[in-house]
Length: 331
View 1 (cartoon, rainbow, N blue to C red):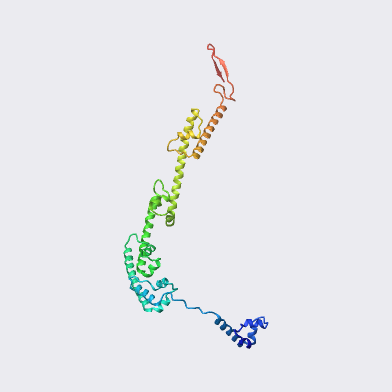
View 2 (view 1 turned 135 degrees about the horizontal axis):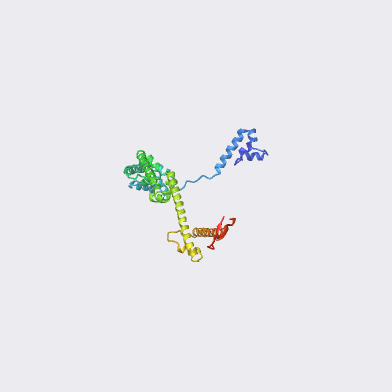
């Protein structure tokens, strides 16, 4: 340890432990803690001495030039902040400029604070005037108008006006919800029943908003429209069936084959002419007519001729009347 302390540069404690074939450097601390600590301290000092000290970076802006920049900023109506000047001059922060020119930096800061205060006073007047608008703005809209990034800045700088704006907006939204409910109740009684999107377009509001505020009324309007649509479609199907039935009978009477293309041309202008519905209706009418025809044939076959007695009826005896030659039945 004494020889290691005299070396230049001195070795580290782990390096000396390896020289002495120790498994760990803690063994040297157990043998002589004081000399081991001294050796470790000398080794750290030698490492620091070998390391190069960072040289001071050259000035990005000379002192007279920086002073002129600060004085020019102070002379403006809206001065440039010291932080912006530092960034434009290539400094990482404005600390060195504040140390070099503390009075100029404080003067620029005071002028900026006065300007900001005047701006806030003007924005306060704008906010007071906005409280009289109808409909009142939301907090987000008001913050955007005043140039703030979020409503939190508005709340922090104008707490009383902010609360008044929130109160007016809440009252306005409550009145709008009541009016919307009244409009939806009126739409629920309209004939024919409108759809929810049609009502929303007429009221200038989104469908999702209506379902969020008055979901029960919106669902009732939708259910009523679906019910009336189903009833109307059923009526149109029935009218189509009646019209197709008359056309098919007329065509069969004329000896024509009732194909779908011919039947469609003979339909009235108000009839349903969808291919699938018309084909289904035509097939149903033809099937009904065919069933009726087969039933009539079976009934004719099952009835006996009118001049023959029914099967199972006992034959009656007939006698000839004297002088007339006519025969009459007798029991």
